[in-house]
Length: 89
Image (cartoon, rainbow, N blue to C red; front, side, top):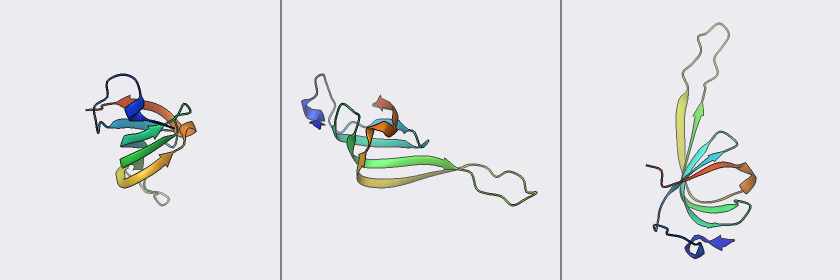
């Protein structure tokens, strides 16, 4: 894995990226390291997703609920990555 500090081009320290994953979740995180397969070691990760509560029979459809959680460090396997955006604002 290559450290992001060794990557060519300008890079703001502690810049965040937004990752869209195959499980329909989004990750807002700082990249510590990555490789050519987009495997990544991430820090300060905020995982965001939407859940639709289950309803009983005959009840009206529930509204989707936005959920999120914080993960201090994680390894993300590259085959689950769909899109990577740098410096989302």
